[in-house]
Length: 270
Image 1 (cartoon, rainbow, N blue to C red):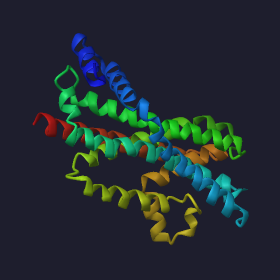
Image 2 (image 1 turned 135 degrees about the vertical axis):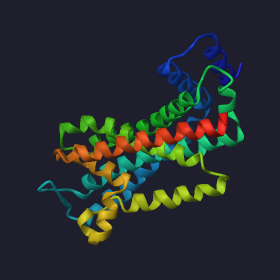
Image 3 (image 1 turned 120 degrees about the horizontal axis):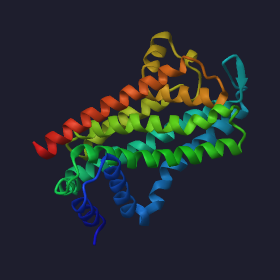
Image 4 (image 1 turned 180 degrees about the horizontal axis):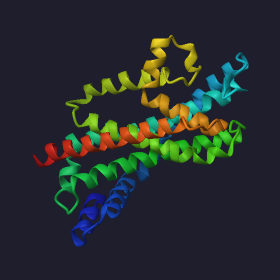
């Protein structure tokens, strides 16, 4: 019995709550990908390579930057940005490319709707799976930071929840935008959007290095909010302003999920 058939059979035999449906879809994805686990390594290794090449290598030439009145080493400055980027990339890989394949070509979601699962169950389940991937990348990266002595505060215990919040925000928005994709060529827009977000997220140098007008633009971007939040947690520079980043990412997550649910209703049930 295929994983999808098994999932459908399970859903047909009993009515599932929201958490049960999410668990079922996560289980289905785990069964599908467990024999191809190695493909997940690329998304984890990329920020690690950045950390060693730029954070450690360039860090030999840079004295460090001031955060909350204290000067920290360059690697400790860059690493939180890498972790936030890992959470973003891990979540986007499944919420865009893989989500599009299931929606447009494999017709996976149409088969799921033949069971008691709803479009909202599908949206939540796919987001949970993408979140699991981004969260795994973030946790592994956080352990590397701890091993390298790049964490200076017990606030860092909240880094993983913060990374999950970043993953939820980007995953929800990624799925919402993917519902408008027409072909694989449209995914060029994903790269076109994520690359500037990464380069202009104040990961490699402080916000003050940008011209004033560009600094305002950067402050309004979601990855910057994630980088700032993670950096505040790893350096212990948590203030009331940290709530701004949390609220920003929560609002983005809710907005993305509302769009995904409506778009799936229209595409699969309309």
